[in-house]
Amino acid sequence: MSNNIPYSLRDKRVWVAGHRGMVGSAICRQLEKENCEILSVDRQHLNLRNQQAVSDWVAAQKPDAVFLAAATVGGIYANDTRPAEFLYDNLIIEANIIHAAKINDVEKLMFLGSACIYPREASQPMSEDALLTGPLEPTNEWYAIAKIAGIKMCQAYRKQYDCDYISAMPNNLYGPGDNFDLETSHVVPALIRKFHEAKHEAKPNVEIWGTGNPLREFVHVDDCASALVFLMKNYSDEPHVNIGTGEEISIAGLAETVSKTVGYNGDLRFNTDYPDGAPRKLLDCQKILQLGWRAEISLENGLEDAYESFLESNQV
Image 1 (spheres, rainbow, N blue to C red):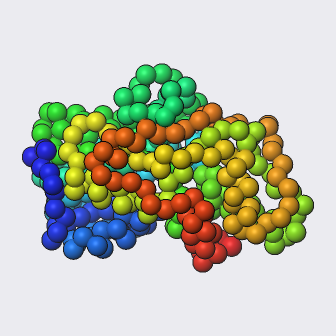
Image 2: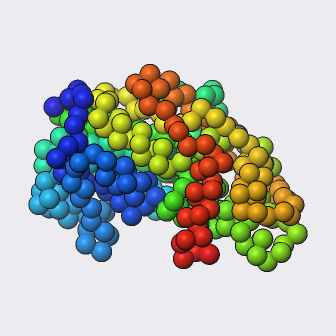
């Protein structure tokens, strides 16, 4: 079954697990161009932590392909304070879906990971073979370990059962459908909300966690979805594939860009009592570039899109 390239999605039944999330909903938007039938199910009707329920649902729905985007996610604070949830939830969700795909003869599966799988001190930009070469960033190691297990599970099922399962690792994602809760969100939505509220409350300054020095690469979720569908159609191999833009910006630079996008004119105040996280996270994306995909959405345009999504949401 493996190495079936190119893989056509036309007329296929495609399950997007996690379709209500930021990435899952972006994958659904992307799949609308592929002439396939998109399958989805909400958490009220299927508990992805229940192995038998997942297996029964897959047996009944018979998807041809699966995008595994369901996960328990969050920023530094959420990762640091809910380690058991981040480890257990993500391990059991991915194990249930990957195994259900195998026993129900799903043709192809894409597992979505995260750039936090790489060692904290990995040389930059981080190539795919940097995985498991050093200690993880402590603030998100529980999530990272679960995602590494998902990559390895796909590789194991490919090796033992010849399943066409692949993995992709995007860098920091943002865009429509993001989580703007200040306790559980990632940096871009957190900054958007902070600056929006500060503007409307006429606050003289906004607190930014950490020193502002760490460097980050940000990928718009629609670019990520485009890459995932591209890989589903054009890639079939054991190694995971990085998804990034090749561009990085400091957290301080990001904060300034977000403040301009929102129209906030006050000062930035960096609170060094809070952790920075990893010092730098830039991905080496030569593998996907050589396959023929590249990001198209600039950070400025992407942030405008994300802010518009925030204004349209009920989180204002």
